[in-house]
Length: 382
Image 1: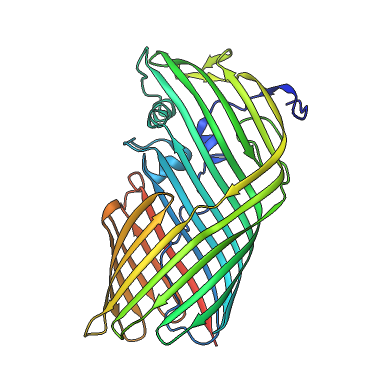
Image 2: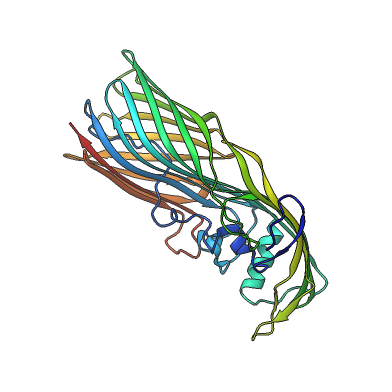
């Protein structure tokens, strides 16, 4: 690619492989798919006045196909839907009665796309026949940011109410935001013409042959947690994440380009492949990423036998769901059985004073799994 600042240039497309555009070498949620954790309340069981903890929290969901497909393979069946997302946090934390200090890494990924785009990706990836004469819309909107920094929290407590207010100071590590739109016209069961335009801000261009750039910027996010225990049997928790916050990059690499299928060839199986040259514009521009509010609410009722029934409500990126939990108190640990009706997921979690571990999924078959959550936390109390 010839770099001409913000001037018109000829940009060479790596290949029209939308999975690379979505996933960066084929993984939308790496490294969070198989080493993930649920974004729900995971306070250390058996906390003491001072605690050091290491936690990895993530939640992964795909509406249109399995997580296996969304991870870049597109080999599993397509259903209705137009979004996929992943929210992940890795934190090393120290806390006492008065404050919390965390070294934090977070990754926020959200993709919107036309359902017919997912359909044509599935057909093309698996060499299945297209419908001749049909025009498939191409629309993908990535919104992806990884950042790292520190999170500071101050605690306030009364007889029955506890509150912690947090501020995170962050710097970007990876970014991809923008849009690809166009269409693909099926000429035959194995052949199609395409045209599309794209406008992307990124650290490493997923489509065009532009070297990766170092990005720099800074931002913040504000969080709030409340815990209210009016009686020995009832406890209510509210967690508001990213109440306000954004991250600004002064000179973010971008590319705006248009492409058509002027150059095509066919693979050994007889299906069309492309290596077109596109006309585009690349350079640098200011960019601001705005964080989206997340809400997590929990109501915990302790039964006469000291076990608990828990109801939780979660809202993430316009998606809301409920979780029902039955928690058993064992001799020196707790065992929780979990149900999420909206995504038909079941889960189990085991908690001790030293670690938490658990899993939730809507299927044990990875080719059907659309919801996956794992929990892993280590605690040192002193």
